[in-house]
Length: 265
Image (cartoon, rainbow, N blue to C red; front, side, top):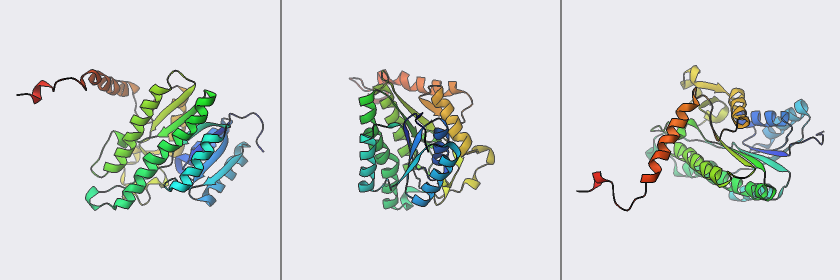
């Protein structure tokens, strides 16, 4: 049974395997009780049982397909109204790699719904309570492919780039509050994520592939350090700082009353 010394409830989506299951374990060890969400109830229950046996924290499971509007709405309502929720990990996601002209439009629509719509709606829902209480933490999983855009990753990279812009805007909106919002950028991680994606993880050099345990431990270390953007394998964070500084330097010139000289005769 869970004791009364709790950090509140941590909600983890995509919690049935991979990084989601590791987040569940690590957050329980930090004193959180858990609400674990994914489609596969039996796998969720296995993760919950393992976490509870190993940590003593309570772990509730909620089987839901976040690409389904009705099921997503039920999860939203829980996040909007449960005053015990103190942390949300938006880990659920999927991918379809391949040439866009050969893609199944319905698969792409499901991908956009899962990676963009559900993340946005769940974040909006949990912020209702966080704003009332003046505290809370949101962890949004983006991807290294938000930056390293490939010919076969048009939609996936696009959705993960959305996560970056969305989270950066929220970080500005809640900068003067007790609400923390982090974006995490995994590279290739050894999980079931790749199954059916069009690319096998075995195709990558092993030095490119991180374990799910190392990925989550690094992400939480970044959270502890107060990083708004955590690039898990980037050796020198100064490279990100220079990248972001270049973006900031362009901003004053992105909207002016006349076109740039190169576009005028």
